[in-house]
Length: 579
Ligand code: G6P
Ligand code: ZN
Image (cartoon, rainbow, N blue to C red):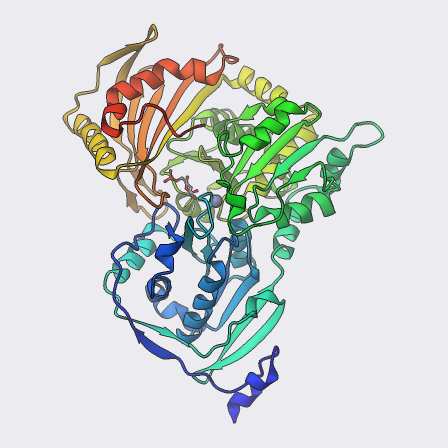
């Protein structure tokens, strides 16, 4: 019997042939992926066939390429990850996938998945995460497909997944494939499904990613910074994993490799499936705990936090001096030469998402580099990186990354910042002040109104779109708190990808003022219920660079509320989050 050669190495007695079956199902109407995959409440994913349908649609969207392919699977370990992975294993086996590479216990940060797809040159990966959204049985789960370059699937793939999800009538699965504890133990298991070999390899969650970081950064220098030397005291960091997936990477890289103290330099480094009931989003509101720690204890020189799946980061200096993500990007762009990876590979262009403040544009102009402005969503950077036009990019939503992978990367961002600090021998605040003195300052803030009623939010956006259509805003002057701003241009941002000419329309309403200030309105694409309105506010000052950002931007905020009539449409007097 040919099948006897395929022994399951966990349990040699399980070497018999398994049969896949076709299960009947009905479509769900709400499986449209958002900015970054499908995100819903856990209970939605728990509905009979809900997860099965979506996985089958991902596979169907991949077409013939799926047969004989290898995929990477893992996520931030949030509640429902294990049953979802078991479902993926069974459906993949029946759909002629040849191999799954899965992080032990289902744990892989989003950047680690991207790195693994690239390292093993496989077809793609499935990431189980709702990123920075809360987890646990009452909260969110998510499924995202990443393509062979390691980045999130582009719109044409997510659109086709959605199309298929509206018509699906059946899925293929292997119900007898025993998944119990399969992902808990390192090693390779081989199954025989319908006469084909199907392999599940459970890998260590950190090894590949840690090796990649060692190739990019100078770990000796970083260790000297964190531990201190005979000449210099230790640079005292506090890294907060917010009970998310980065805990395992932080312990491995910062504690074991770079000599940080497990007691004083890291916190919340054990991943929990409900993130300890916190909102694992590294910003001033949800990471307030870290902010307070740094304010209370001025022995800390540096703080950083990560989100649930490890792609976001927030950077703080001594006394919780806050670095906006837009400034963080600009500072890194200005100092890349101190990182071995860029010394070796050179620096191509820079990019930011449209709502991100334009500080990096000034660095690009000075250094003579290309700069790209793309819609919100990391997927829009991938083509530029693949074409060798883009080395470093970032978003105001606390994402920073480079072309080492095709996802934003929280740990990478912190290692990059520490490399700059080590190179310049300056603290965070000093570095920012030097930067602003050189380039001027792009003041930026974002107001989020979370989970508003969809109807009011849509009406507000429709009204703004009406203004754009009739050109009514252009030329109008608005005054608040003694400052006057005149509208130079208003549009709904549209992007043509310079590599494949694909077009993304309606990516955010922009009101651009004559002095370069901007007001931007967008509906979030990552929420799981209701509508989240984001208002982005930016102005530029060449000389006045040390005023508090909230003070500087107050007049524009008022004008933004007046033009949109946000309070009237939503009934909200205050934003949920200000960053
Ligand atoms: C995810 C994406 C980012 C995006 C962010 C905000 O984190 O990976 O690229 O900037 O969501 O999206 P939203 O649609 O909620 O503003
Ligand atoms: Zn994330």
